[in-house]
Length: 111
Length: 120
Image (cartoon, rainbow over all chains, first blue to last red; front, side, top):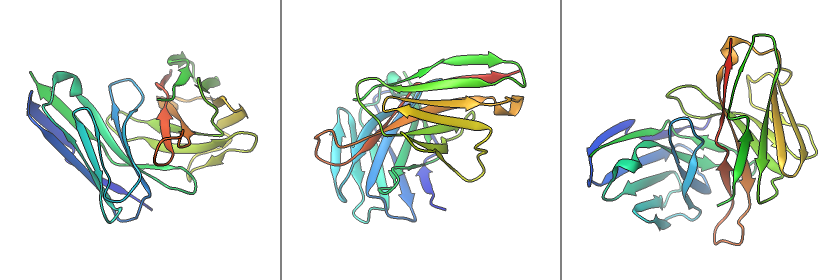
């Protein structure tokens, strides 16, 4: 079956540092989505990517859709304590709309 | 973004009872909703696709008679965990499939806040 490999699994950084995480797939996706999940809550959409090579920003967050459509990365600049949480990438199947999720990256920020 | 609500946010029940979880799209219509379950420190696992006006489609290994899904309107899907057992205890999350909404690009999914189920 299709799988997304997300790395790193966890990160512990100092406040103010930049963060980068990425996802790779053996399959091509037409849509890549990045979500953040806080404990006990549902995932919140951060960035949606629809075109190969697309680079999109949302505040301090920047994500890119790989040119091969098999990978994506998410960068967070100048991290702050409220960035703490689990970040998930997801590839969307265009015919069914189903999402294939990565394993998640747990981010901890030290003030 | 589009808002999806879930009710209840948490529920505790006795083994053998049935529990119904509601998923609503608050400011838009969703012909397709999805149900996931999530175990601690794990990713989301898709259980089924809920289609308005038709039967749900279940992922491999998910018992359709155990997890009943009804999508009777364009804004409401329900998941009923029948004859719940302790191993059904989990975090259940729904999402709604949303079209392009006029934005450049395509569709996406918005998630509800989740329902934590504890079966004693």
